[in-house]
Length: 137
Image (cartoon, rainbow, N blue to C red; front, side, top):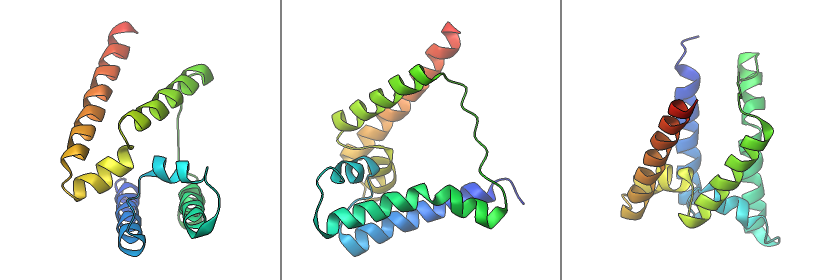
């Protein structure tokens, strides 16, 4: 199999799911907002949010079913570092009124200036973090 095909297929599925959610439900596919919606149980929106997140979690299972192998991952960080990183990401998504899926996938597709500013901030923060980690290591 060509090495880029799984990534290409994943990108197509992300775009398709985001387009379907906005066309069928009128909602942006921002995962942090959808996850926060599960904290308010009840109604069809809660069920739709749960189904969307369940679909995200079943992605690796579908990949394994189609390719016969689980996606390969390598996590080199310790549990405390991963916990701190998760908390910082959660804080950042609240501070930035959304996450990379909401701003990067859906917001940029809708030509949102706020999303462009958010994505540029995400990218600059990532470049700065990698640079600092490499310099300090």
